[in-house]
Every structure is written in C-alpha cells, then in structure tokens.
Length: 102
Image (tube, rainbow, N blue to C red; front, side, top):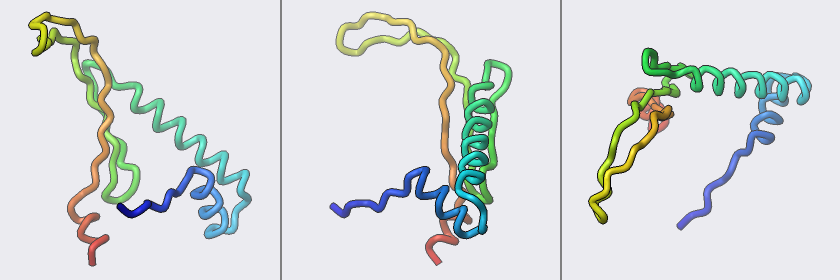
C-alpha cells in the first residue's frame, strides 16, 4: 500500500501565505477564524435546522440532526437509548471529481 502525502494545517497555512504573498501569522489567524466559524455553524444544528456550508466550489460540509432513538442490540436483544447527535457529512460534487480526473 502506498503511503499518502500528508498536508497538515501548518503546511497549508505556509503554502497559502507563500502563494498570496501574505504574512504566515496573518494567514494563520484567518485560517483559525475560518475553522472556528465552521465549527460554530456545524454545532448550531438542531431538530429544526440542518446546515450546509459550501466551503469551496464543488465541496461542501453538511451538519445533519439525528434524533434520539431506541436501538436493539442484536447480540443480547436488549433495547438501549441513543441520544440525539449532529452527524457531519462531507460532499464532493460529481463535476469536481470529473475536473480532478481530466
């Protein structure tokens, strides 16, 4: 299996600073603000509202509310209570995928 090349948050910040001729600390502040805003928006999901963040052209983050429910354990047959939660999803459009493979 091939080892993937990893791009960390710090690598991205440095690359963006270099390609935009901006100070690394300024780009880091913007990146951190973006990260905080994305977290705040996704955590605002509730039973009345799901959210979709169109992060880039063809790439989006969705936050979907999953209501509480009871679930049966298939091994023991016992019923258990599962609390409500936010399910984050990541979506890439077909056109974006096609662009990657041209």
